[in-house]
Length: 206
Image (tube, rainbow, N blue to C red; front, side, top):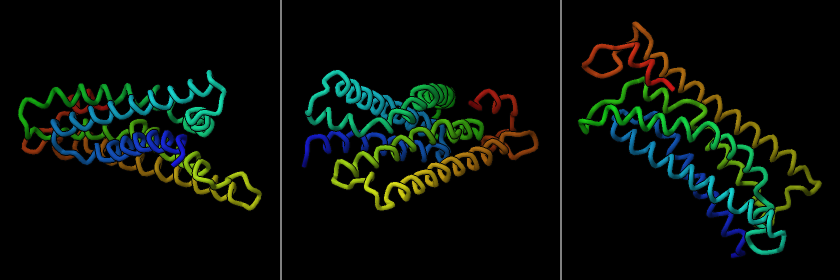
């Protein structure tokens, strides 16, 4: 296996793992588990950013034909959503983890819907998953598939990629809205067996 393909696979694996963890956050109904997974997501996001930035910087400085240089040539598309992760996702995940920490005194403390709605915010899951998706064209090119060939492949790839990003965004938006509605006054209690508190839910809503 070529060296640059190994580098790209490593970066893609980290972003894919981060996307899977981010997708599962809103389904966690225990505060301690939510805090733990938020820590995983934070670590994976920082690792993905560090790997991506290191490879891009090394390729820019070197300008040679090493595996890192060739891998860097396949990563410009990844840089755009990765910037969104750095600017939006990391900050929100840190706040989410801190919020969940306030409910972890008992192992089985339920996670309030306000906290789960914050975990399902599109700016947590969407940038990470789009970054993972953006690694795919570079992997395909490194594997020998020429996406720039004039055979309609480029158009199909752009269409499929755009539809995938749209579908991911709509899914995150709908799920976030569904969880956020449960924090409103008149909705069922945010914690099983406890009265709902719109003020508490609002303070957790990122």
